[in-house]
Image 1: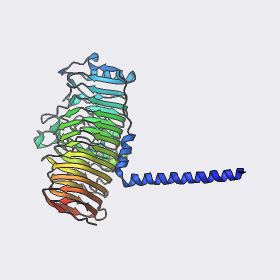
Image 2: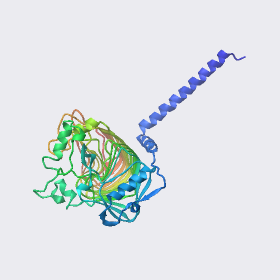
Image 3: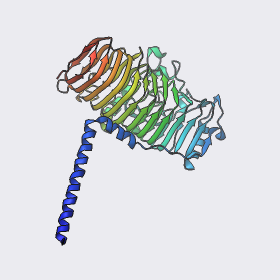
Image 4: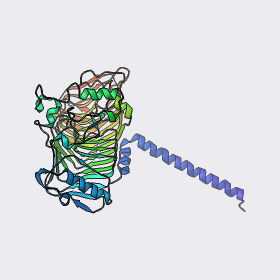
Amino acid sequence: MITRKTQICKWIVFLTAGLVVLISCAEKTASVSSNDPWKKMELVIKSIPQTKFTAKTYNINDFGAIADGKTLNTLAFEKAIKECASKGGGIVLVPNGRYLTGAIHLESNVNLHLEDQAEILFSLNPKNYPIVHTSWEGTEVMNYSPLIYAKGKTNVAITGKGTLNGQADSTNWWIWSGGKGYGWKKGIPSQNDPSNREVLVDMAEKNIPVSERVFGEGRYLRPNFIEFFECNTVLIKDITVINSPFWILHPIKTNNMIIDGVTVNSHGPNNDGCDPEYSQNILIKNCTFNTGDDCIAIKAGRDADGRRVAIPSKNIIVQNCKMIDGHGGVVIGSEISAGVNNVFVENCVMDSPNLDRAIRIKTNSKRGGVIEDIYVRNLEVGVVKECVLKLNMFYNVYGSQTGNFIPTIRNVSLENVTVKNGGKYSVWAEGYKESPVENITLKNVKIEKVDSIYLLKNVKNINFINTYINDKKVESIN
């Protein structure tokens, strides 16, 4: 006869055994996740929610839009978007044709959809871009609205195979850069004037509230093209973006965003293709970047402003993209003060005599930041000018860039990479004696036609596994 005490004992043994199994499984799962970062990437992708919209369509022509490329349609876009949002969301349709407009401000549950032959032309008059809370080179500011802007919205999209044309060139927005190659001449005002860019940086260093950092007219800080600020669940799909005033795709403080099949072709100053900043769970796939600056540049705020916000960018995934012209293919920095981690790049092609570097991390002791866990695999590189992998703690482009915030760069891995023409260096890595660049791995990498194998300064534990440079196997350095 089985007593109640015996039954209880059996249940205790059963539950204990089950708990041991669960703990063992959890440990194995954790082990797989920690040993294989690509499994972590897959989990991040699965966790990103999809945008969903009702089928109800709001045609901008029904709200007074005229597709002649000359009539300003800002009000028509505004009416259509507000009507759509007020009735539960849906599709704001831009039919085939050319539509001139000022800033477009999106709302939650709205999908701005461009037909294949639709082109939105953005006004060159700064007065058509109202002052909003935005960011400029990693510093928050009240400045001209981005050409397309959403702040604090959820479930929002820009889709379709039409074109967004910023119309920027060396006769308008680009002159403000102060670059002689972009139409600027002595005597023309620009962002570099004493009362402009550096004043903003100084205000941030003094922790002046963003609401009091009011720029706009007379300050010559160009607007971003597409900016999602503090948004969640965002989709940008299939569009073509050309001729941007400044940074092109700029998710800031935004989570759960998919950028899919987008073509960026813009060769102006600071024309970064995509700049995720203070953002998490960002998937960039099937895109083509042909730019005047970095193709993709992952950001996390500049100097004191980045440390004030203190939101690292993480879980940034780049898949199946093509990088043509640019300062770098996938870049982290230089506005990087809040740090970046968990970046995954796979199955990309980078090839242009005007592409300077394939993978790059840039910071300095004024920026600071912890940059770690960067994983790259299955990369096909044709030509790069300078180097394949550059990790630099001494980035300096704006004069004195030294301070008391020594950065950290560690855990960077390149696997299954082929390079036909590697430029000056295969790997260029420079750290501080007290903070060396640490744990760099090149596995199954083949680099041809490179001047020097590497330039290394204060680097700890760089591993070359089955890696050949100029047909010679390279040994690891501890």
